[in-house]
Image (cartoon, rainbow, N blue to C red; front, side, top):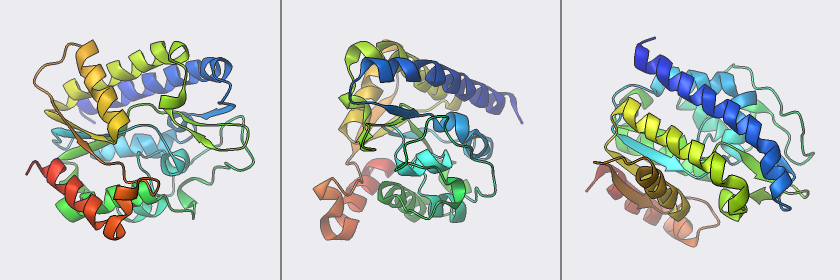
Length: 249
């Protein structure tokens, strides 16, 4: 493991610790959040493998999502549709634990999870379509989420970071912005592609807050089935738009 690879893992481990510390504050400060899972903790083994294998292959573009959904929530991999994590990224047979406090509708089954994540499936199929093998892909792009916590209410409904009170997130969002700036420096990245408007907004804020120059920020529509554009022509419209942005044409 080279120095930069070790540094990326160290930076991410520190983010994991900070998110563990702030989980309780977020739950306490937001009536709409009763559960906050930290995949960087209980799914650390696959995430560490992801960083070790793909973190420093030469990528100059960061593809950044908002926060974990079902995919990363189970696999520890950003946009981690389990089938794509196993069959495309070749990350399998690693331990995934469970959060201490579990919602009965949000149980964690790890890398063996059978439920697909459509957003993740679309993202990784797009990346494979553009670059082919994951080794070649990560010579060009690196995928991460801005905010590592997967949150939901008492009914098990997903709560995204934009639904949190600003007073409860200012510190942890600042930490996430610093993490992004440190990853940019580690990779010598030149471009961030925000997946959706919120991710793009947070990328702009991170760049401004940390006085980073020379970074281009672009945006692709979110691939969620909840986004009508992502479903047009069975996803072909979303794919065409996103492909053009990522490869810069």
